Length: 246
Image (cartoon, rainbow, N blue to C red; front, side, top):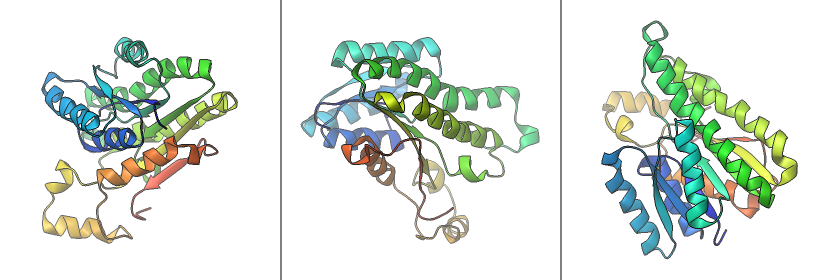
């Protein structure tokens, strides 16, 4: 993977950050994407770690839920780094709410950020991948997109949509050297899980065969594998990384 160019959306923190750092350790040059101005310092810290590890990359500020912004991001990466070999569609949000209380705006925000962004970024990246007859798309979904979950109808719809989206890309462009796969994380250590009390955490762990929460690095390892030559015959698949939850 030495010298390949990877774009990781929403990579200033959490899972995206871990994926960006892991791909850099594998030799990739990484475009670290962030959206809000107050995320710039975190994104710069990720890039500094990448450079300290001997790799390189760039910062790219873009609202990937906006078609023009996503297109401009990919073009900026190609202009700066010469190509795009790997795209990790990681950017996402959640707003837990029961179905009857989900507002139109919340539904639209979730679908736009979690699903539309993957479409906008993939469409822009595939155009460059086709020319090289090589490319790897990885979409970060969720086990909720497979099983559903109370209070997350909008989130589950967006994450489930990534499954069909990814498999369709695999069928359309697999013959041109492009692979498209999905990672479905389970419960990963985050600010959200840190806010759970002991009783809530214990109840959650009962549903997980491995009896622990995942770490962002668990997802990063799976992403690095799927992006590597070792996974060259894996296409159109969904990989749950959930400690055996589902």
